[in-house]
Image (cartoon, rainbow, N blue to C red; front, side):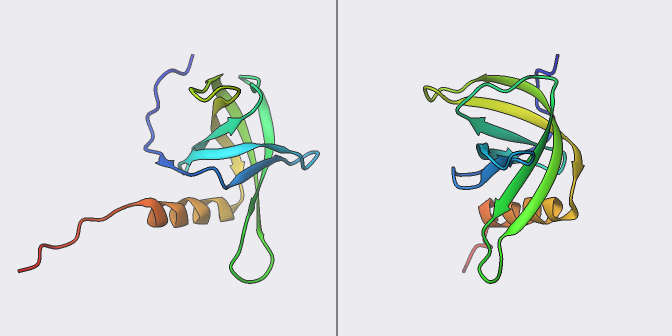
Length: 119
Protein backbone atom coordinates (compact mmCIF):
# COMPACT_ATOMS: atom_id res chain seq x y z
CA UNK A 1 0.00 0.00 0.00
CA UNK A 2 1.16 3.51 -0.80
CA UNK A 3 2.24 5.22 2.44
CA UNK A 4 4.91 7.83 1.79
CA UNK A 5 4.95 10.71 -0.67
CA UNK A 6 8.13 10.80 -2.71
CA UNK A 7 7.39 13.80 -4.91
CA UNK A 8 7.59 17.41 -3.74
CA UNK A 9 4.15 19.00 -3.83
CA UNK A 10 3.04 22.61 -3.63
CA UNK A 11 0.11 23.57 -1.36
CA UNK A 12 -2.91 25.38 -2.79
CA UNK A 13 -5.77 27.31 -1.23
CA UNK A 14 -9.39 26.19 -1.60
CA UNK A 15 -10.24 27.90 -4.85
CA UNK A 16 -9.38 25.47 -7.66
CA UNK A 17 -12.42 23.22 -8.01
CA UNK A 18 -12.13 19.73 -9.45
CA UNK A 19 -15.08 18.22 -11.30
CA UNK A 20 -16.08 14.71 -12.28
CA UNK A 21 -15.50 14.80 -16.06
CA UNK A 22 -18.29 12.28 -16.69
CA UNK A 23 -21.16 14.23 -15.11
CA UNK A 24 -19.50 17.66 -14.59
CA UNK A 25 -20.37 17.69 -10.87
CA UNK A 26 -17.89 19.10 -8.34
CA UNK A 27 -15.84 16.38 -6.64
CA UNK A 28 -13.57 18.57 -4.51
CA UNK A 29 -10.72 21.07 -4.50
CA UNK A 30 -7.04 20.79 -5.37
CA UNK A 31 -4.98 20.47 -2.20
CA UNK A 32 -1.59 20.25 -3.86
CA UNK A 33 -0.07 19.29 -7.21
CA UNK A 34 3.03 17.87 -8.83
CA UNK A 35 3.86 16.83 -12.38
CA UNK A 36 2.86 13.24 -11.57
CA UNK A 37 -0.02 13.57 -9.14
CA UNK A 38 -2.31 15.65 -7.00
CA UNK A 39 -4.15 15.69 -3.71
CA UNK A 40 -7.86 16.32 -3.73
CA UNK A 41 -9.88 17.59 -0.76
CA UNK A 42 -13.45 16.32 -0.90
CA UNK A 43 -16.59 16.23 1.25
CA UNK A 44 -16.92 12.49 0.54
CA UNK A 45 -14.43 9.63 0.81
CA UNK A 46 -13.15 8.44 -2.57
CA UNK A 47 -12.61 4.83 -3.61
CA UNK A 48 -8.95 3.79 -3.37
CA UNK A 49 -7.68 1.96 -6.46
CA UNK A 50 -10.36 3.45 -8.72
CA UNK A 51 -9.58 5.48 -11.82
CA UNK A 52 -11.26 8.89 -12.07
CA UNK A 53 -11.87 11.16 -15.06
CA UNK A 54 -11.29 14.63 -13.64
CA UNK A 55 -11.84 18.10 -15.05
CA UNK A 56 -10.20 21.29 -13.78
CA UNK A 57 -11.84 24.58 -14.68
CA UNK A 58 -9.16 27.23 -14.28
CA UNK A 59 -10.26 30.89 -14.39
CA UNK A 60 -8.54 33.06 -16.98
CA UNK A 61 -7.76 36.77 -16.84
CA UNK A 62 -8.99 37.23 -20.39
CA UNK A 63 -11.08 35.00 -22.59
CA UNK A 64 -12.72 31.70 -21.69
CA UNK A 65 -11.70 29.59 -18.71
CA UNK A 66 -9.03 26.94 -19.22
CA UNK A 67 -10.36 23.37 -19.15
CA UNK A 68 -7.88 20.68 -18.15
CA UNK A 69 -8.86 17.01 -18.44
CA UNK A 70 -7.11 14.32 -16.37
CA UNK A 71 -7.36 10.60 -15.77
CA UNK A 72 -5.98 9.69 -12.37
CA UNK A 73 -5.91 6.72 -9.97
CA UNK A 74 -6.77 7.21 -6.31
CA UNK A 75 -3.87 5.79 -4.26
CA UNK A 76 -5.12 6.66 -0.78
CA UNK A 77 -7.93 8.46 1.00
CA UNK A 78 -8.30 9.41 4.66
CA UNK A 79 -10.28 11.79 6.81
CA UNK A 80 -8.87 15.29 7.00
CA UNK A 81 -8.34 17.16 10.27
CA UNK A 82 -11.22 19.39 9.15
CA UNK A 83 -14.52 17.68 10.04
CA UNK A 84 -16.48 16.26 7.09
CA UNK A 85 -13.52 16.57 4.69
CA UNK A 86 -11.39 13.83 3.13
CA UNK A 87 -7.93 14.00 1.54
CA UNK A 88 -7.22 11.72 -1.42
CA UNK A 89 -3.91 11.22 -3.24
CA UNK A 90 -3.93 10.59 -6.98
CA UNK A 91 -1.36 9.39 -9.48
CA UNK A 92 -1.85 10.81 -12.99
CA UNK A 93 -2.50 8.27 -15.73
CA UNK A 94 -3.25 10.74 -18.54
CA UNK A 95 -3.07 14.54 -18.48
CA UNK A 96 -3.48 17.19 -21.12
CA UNK A 97 -0.39 19.36 -21.80
CA UNK A 98 -2.19 22.22 -20.05
CA UNK A 99 -1.80 20.38 -16.73
CA UNK A 100 2.00 20.77 -16.86
CA UNK A 101 1.56 24.48 -17.55
CA UNK A 102 -0.79 24.76 -14.56
CA UNK A 103 1.71 23.03 -12.25
CA UNK A 104 4.48 25.33 -13.46
CA UNK A 105 2.34 28.46 -13.06
CA UNK A 106 1.25 27.45 -9.55
CA UNK A 107 4.82 26.67 -8.55
CA UNK A 108 5.94 30.14 -9.66
CA UNK A 109 3.00 31.81 -7.95
CA UNK A 110 3.34 30.03 -4.59
CA UNK A 111 7.13 29.67 -4.28
CA UNK A 112 9.33 32.17 -2.51
CA UNK A 113 12.82 32.71 -3.77
CA UNK A 114 15.55 34.23 -1.59
CA UNK A 115 16.44 37.79 -2.44
CA UNK A 116 20.09 38.81 -2.69
CA UNK A 117 21.39 40.67 0.37
CA UNK A 118 21.54 44.41 -0.17
CA UNK A 119 24.52 46.45 0.95
